[in-house]
Amino acid sequence: MESGASNSRTHAVLKDSSWFSQFRNGSNPWMARYAYGLMFLVSNMLAWAVRDYGRGASREIEKLKGCASGDCWGADGALRVSMGCFAFYIVMFLSTIGTKKLNERRDSWHSGWWSVKITVFIVLTIIPFLFPSTFIEIYGEVAHFGAGVFLLIQLISIISFIRWLNDCFQSEKYAERCHIHVMLIATTSYVVCIMGIILMYIWYAPEPSCLQNIFFISWTLVLLQLMTSVSLHPKVNAGFLTPGLMGLYIVFICWCAIRRHHDHFLLFFYFCFFSEPGGQSCNRKAEASNKTDWLTIISFVVAVLAMVIATFSTGIDSQCFQLKKEDTQAEDDIPYGYGFFHFVFATGAMYFAMLLIGWNTHHTIKRWTIDVGWTSVWVRIVNEWLAVCVYFAIYIITEDHYIVAVWMLVAPIVLKWQQMDEPV
Image (cartoon, rainbow, N blue to C red; front, side):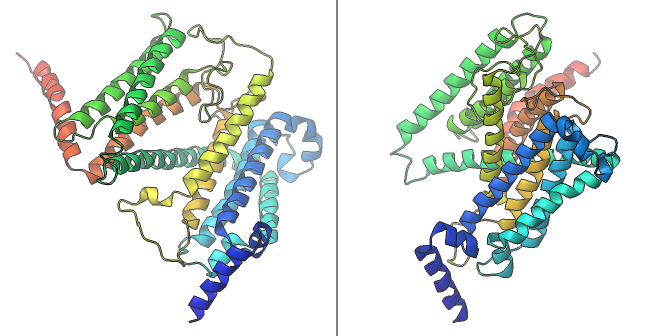
């Protein structure tokens, strides 16, 4: 009886109160997620400001214990802000993990107590500036691993969405109605993939000496062909939609990896940062420039907002790790996994720090740029290859015939190599 009365009061508050009242009273977890996203954005912008403009405030910052040697600006300063953001979301993760029902104490802590949490957020942002640089360097090394975890979570979320979309179109309810739509989407995906690969060859591999870019582009084409072959195998017969959408994703990652940071083509594709440094000969789309123009600034702003949106959308998709997703939900169940939500933001703080420093704690990045450097290039390329591996892994776990199809495609190549290695 008390639980039912409590749920009734909660629904009444959500129905009759204004958004501000719901936020102040901690009665709306959907409103709370926007507040956490805003705090994440503020932390990221502060990390960028410290990196690019921290030198001007270094005289004041050097009064702090950990900044006596002037190591609180640039990459070191960005890592310190990232560490504070990471610490805040880890605290929230540990204090909300396991929350199942609304009106629990942990639910109230997640959705309310904002004056306390903002105070904790500010304190945890300041504390890392008291630590010595050695401690920050250790955090920078750990952040490489945390950023990798974030990328893996994001991959699983994207692939789960693609799989969900394919299953939805193939269901009895939509199979006949959406047949033409599926063919149009799949055909468009493959056309865009092929056009993208051709343009990458023209723009970023204009000469035979551009072996690295040629390898990246060619291997992307091979992966697209492999996914298509497995999907169309008689044992699988999954159609063109899933490999087509995955092909778009891996082609896009490859494009982002080999683009130069002064190439503003496809500027507003929000996942696409600029990895390869400028000034290389294998690039007909852009020339290196030492000045910061308005397109560079817009690119940076779009990239930062994209990062926040990606973290936000991934954080509320806690079911992407469940093989069997729950279709029914009780009225008093929480709308999304609080612990998972905060864990994604914690790893996202590490990932954004890596973007700001180019995945290298000793790397100096030009102002208003993000994720530039050869380390960033290889991170994106490995991310592309990992995406295909995760794609196959998810299907192999849930569909046994994928194992058969993959083996029937790979076995002839393996056996041929063995025959060539055997002495005559």
